[in-house]
Length: 443
Image (cartoon, rainbow, N blue to C red; front, side):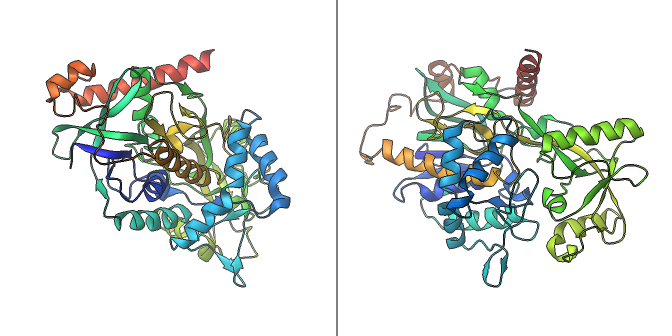
């Protein structure tokens, strides 16, 4: 690892990968990820990715997104996402992403709160298909260094400008790294919840550092609960039963086998209906019946869900499965503008880490992958535009600190982390996030 890079990307999900792929090829780029490179929530996305089917679909797509978000969306961001969606999809196809086709044409499916079919998919592992292809493309770039099991401990900032990061390496040592531009693409906050569909190491690190350094946040109490995850008694990451299952015709049943709601309600509304039914029935879950899907083979349309349920003892072709709501997605985050720039100079954020206003109070199904890709691409293009006079010979703004040792850097950048007890520091960060969420909920 070098001490200085043109850009440092924290996270290697779809947002991190798309950023790297759109930065200039003569830039030296460092990507880090807190766990293994395949353990980003981008890999877990099942349902699909939205796209503007044609110009006639614009108004409906826009309205569906706003309605799901309770009209608290930032309209400019929604417009950008929709208008740039086809460009992004074409790029994904160029990178080898294989979407389902019918008679040689892209096949569109539908999920809850969508007024029409506009979602592209790959079996029931769309996130894995997209992320793996993008990650493979990044790994071919000679100008990108990717480090796994490397944790962002703090940022190096002064005068409201981010100069770099303090990293904990895989061997436990602490190393500073400087970057012309820094971008957070480090996921959501599922790791601070007991029941979540997220990987447990995604604990909102960027939010905690924002709270510590005065970086603007937005709506961090806007947390989406997914209505249908597979219920079990074990305390572990919940397995998601994709909304596409209900979109294709699966129905929800109470303890007596009676259908009790419209399965295509927006996620937050449907979660409320499920919780009311659980309270009424005195149960820890409701039931999902996939046998009502009759116009396709569910073992082929949802092979991953079928296999996982079999491993848990349920054959979805012959019996109902127990489902329960669980924390799933984070609509709030680090405030960014249309270019994914935060309130701190040289610091960007994209994906679930940030809040650009697309989702409002509640995310419309399958908008997450699209939103992450569109705004990661825009962030990369903005970095390049702001650095159009890029020259390897230029003097960086952090030239006076780049060669300092850690103790000297602690003084200059007022690093507050207790480097002797990073575990306690991480727990304190979680509590800070919880306290802020509870404060906002109480207002």
